[in-house]
Amino acid sequence: MTSNPVTVTVAYRVTPGRAADFHSWGWALLGATARQPGFLGGGVLVDGGAEWHVVYRFASEGSALAWEKSPSREQWDARLEGVAREAERRRVPGARAWFDAQTLTPAPPAPPSKWKLWFVNMSAVFPPVLLFNLTVLPYLGDLNALFRTLLLCLCVTALVTWILMPRLQRFFRKWLYPSLQALRGRHKRRAT
Image (cartoon, rainbow, N blue to C red; front, side, top):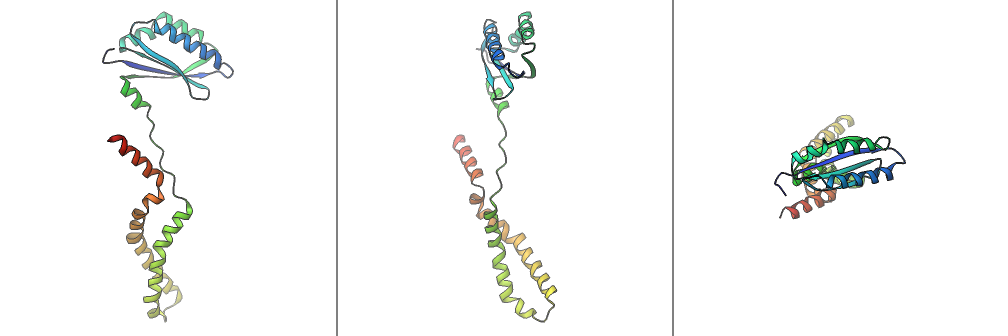
């Protein structure tokens, strides 16, 4: 095997009801490809729907191009008429690069459930409201209820936003986002 193999994956959209024909065609194509110089292997993959993939690997870019531009390959493509049509072609040098190119970015973690958010918010809001009611409001009894409430909201909101909530979110992070923690844990284990 050379140090610069190339992997080619070709996606096909299969005509409804013609999946068996495409399956036969794909494996027959790979049989013909196997007789070409530099062929290293391949397969036919289905993603469960109308899209199928034919993957093959050659020892070099030149041997892959020679096969793809050959009259034999053109004949194989002509046999596909009415069965499927090519949707996409990807060529990646080396095995590692091909697998890296196929790696999907993980989906962002799901937001925490509402009751967990409620609990963290109550943990942040209740203590300063209680403290404000016990220590400050008795001295503001003569003040209009609208201004007392406004003062309470301004003080508590500032305290919760800049001091309490960031600390509580860090403290409850593993509880709020367990899937993210599990993902990070797997990543750390793999890296070691």
